[in-house]
Length: 352
Ligand code: DNO
Image (cartoon, rainbow, N blue to C red; front, side):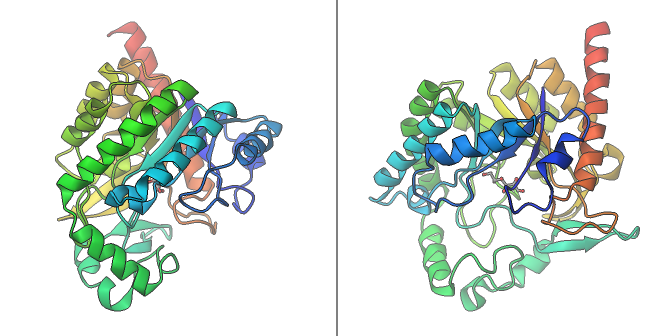
């Protein structure tokens, strides 16, 4: 497996030089943060990003993400132009030698939390999601002003319009629109040498009346069946899928791994705290609801050798920065994950 960490570009308070000092980490997951959604990500931007990363002795392994324009998810007539642009971006990734693209198909909001500073007794804090707290947010009346992380992304009018469109859509249409998208982009990805991995919806259930479809094992299998290509794969995110108790993560890994469709892995832990509620937890299995070793063993047993990154960490030791993406706790996490990897590999070699 290729051990990587996410880097948010020149504005990231965490430097590439710091990431390089984390033992075992050899790759970077990043993106072009300047190109507006729907436009072609220029070759020059990706090549420049790659050069910045390689100059620090690291590889640019994954672009996470190129966001999918909402018109594509809505199936509007304008989608074809946006899909053409998406295909061109994929070609540019291929030309620049980037092997993996992580993307998602969540309507309106990507990851959603109700608290970005959930406090722990030891003084650290993490992100959390509470069903009751979300229910108190009235998006139609207030816009996203009270939705952590999203307050500045949409004007209230734009948001209201999007909500209306998606709420009228339903999940069947979302599936149709995802299939339409995949049938167009996957052949291009395959030709370009880029493996795509769709990120599960986070959290993996419908929120705010919006149709969300990438939530469980059945959905993931349905997606890889839409286009039978190694380029049409999944980003297995233990934190997103793990928030739903009924998701059997090692089994998901075994099933997708047997078909060679795991194209990227995010590993983090969550502690389920109630109905559709959870807080993010340190990576250790004993501190959350996910059996991280079982997941790692399934990855090793399936022969997965693609990129993997530690996902969200807590904020610890007084660090300030992007919620979930400080250096310190992610570094503790990635060391733990590599310990699990070493254990799983030696167990696999000697016993399985
Ligand atoms: C959150 C991330 C997501 C992810 C996108 C991929 O921290 O895991 O924002 O990057 O869903 O498209």
